[in-house]
Length: 101
Image 1 (cartoon, rainbow, N blue to C red):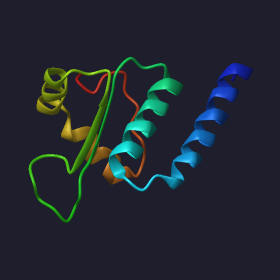
Image 2 (cartoon, one colour; image 1 turned 60 degrees about the horizontal axis):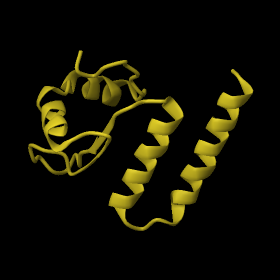
Image 3 (tube, rainbow, N blue to C red; image 1 turned 135 degrees about the horizontal axis):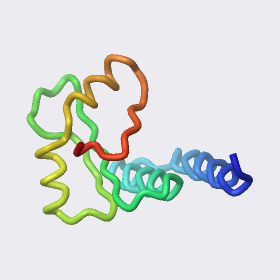
């Protein structure tokens, strides 16, 4: 791992720790997603959280980075529930170049 990448990861963790004082979920999710997008070099990012106790069709919370409302709707429409199921079943983060594929 390069020194630059190590510094970026260190900065990511430091900035994530700084989010500890945030009491509102919306700003916390926006900042966390922006940090993740920054460290990964992604152009777009989308994060949604579901509450297992709620059986609603949509996410309880969601945030996007660099996406229009139409792109968010398209992503939700084609998002692989298989990826989510695998992450929940294995307890592992699923890394994929495109969830749409």
